[in-house]
Length: 243
Image 1: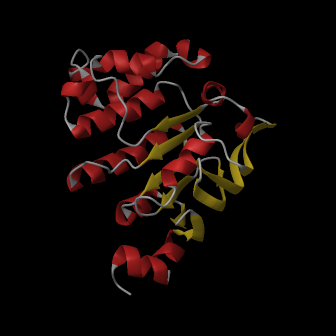
Image 2: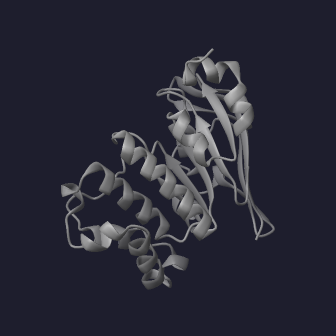
């Protein structure tokens, strides 16, 4: 099953504010690609462009899947999700007054996922046992780490092929950040996912990434594999503090 996400020369923003300037990146099937940058540099905007939430003013976002090429800039968010693209949004965006299980079931609304609810629910509970223990608990009463687990599991309920994870470390204690990033890798391997992860925690992101892109003020300023990223002077100066 072939899969490739290609973002080419994308310009996007909000009204008069331009957030992305000619951004290009690619992701191939089975890769974990990290989009690295501090807050306010356009990571979330790019994720929203892929999901059809923000429309680029220029450039293209295409998904090649099973021999067909889909122009995501012309599709609704629902249609993009139905292709097998899911996002774990920054800040989790759960339904706080619904239970854990109700939140999970809401993630399974795309037609293909509806036929696999029992299997995907079992997988979610196996991946995150604490969710099984708290399936009747209101999501809003859970800890930040547990809510992040629920947000990831909810995305998996749609049976995605491409998973976008936006700032998984936000609001979490360091030990929970490490656990969450490790779990993303485990799920990617066991579920056969392709992952695009926007993250500002360089140390954690490169633990699981195959390649990475650095975005600064809405522009991609460097791309390469993990070794190249670690040796790059920009990275050493701004992320590792060793330049």
